[in-house]
Image (cartoon, rainbow, N blue to C red; front, top):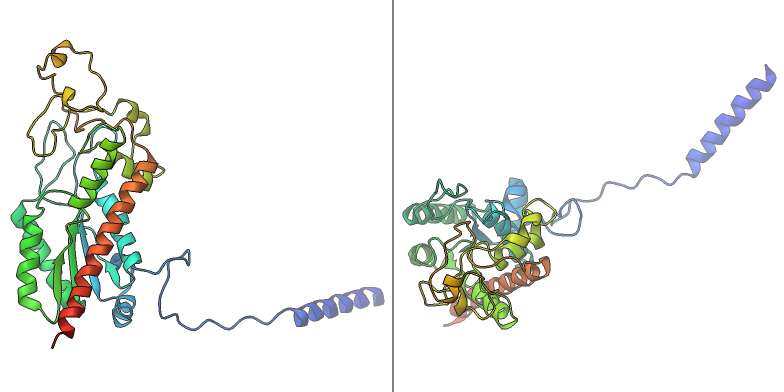
Length: 319
């Protein structure tokens, strides 16, 4: 019995000594002024992933620019999921907000001007008038929330530039100088034109909808998330796209297009349409090309938005 008691006493003493030697628990850290994501690497900049106190605090700390980026629900060929515009839009607008440092990415609108089709069932669209009404409403709601600058831009061509520019012009006249609304068009038109020119100059076939730019960007951003049916890329060839400024063209007019064994096409007779949702040839799509297209969009958007804000500062500083 004495031996057992001695053993118990020794164990209790050892446990007490170990507890005494253990470092004291660290006090709970003070509340951070800028919340970060769970990874602890990036600031929280997505409106729909923030709480209202976090939004209020972010605006108070200088994040006074709201970024509205429209996406779209649209068929994207056999190889890409229908929500591509919206999925890419979320990544693009978040990257723009992070680069700017003074902005919050608002929820991406999943519908833009388009028309549904039973032949290619993947598109659900708005009318330009509906898009204009939505852009106007959400922009005014952002201003009511406390944002001083509202940027509207889009990933889909429907409604661009007219709907966006008209809304921005109308609201700028209504709210300036207390708040400003701008249309950032370079993230779409200029970025696409420059990337398309680079592709052609480097020997890639011309493409547009569901072609190399779209498919490559989706591979880069969501190749491991199920955004692209990778096994279908080797056959991802659609109907040829026209040269800039033309309404139609044969494959032979594109020096980078693969040769067509169809004799009729060689003679200039239009080949039968594939009508698979792809405009051009997407077979050379890669994640590396997608990163390039993505980076170009971010660069153009950030530069244009910074220009808007800088010009605003200059105007305010004038006597």
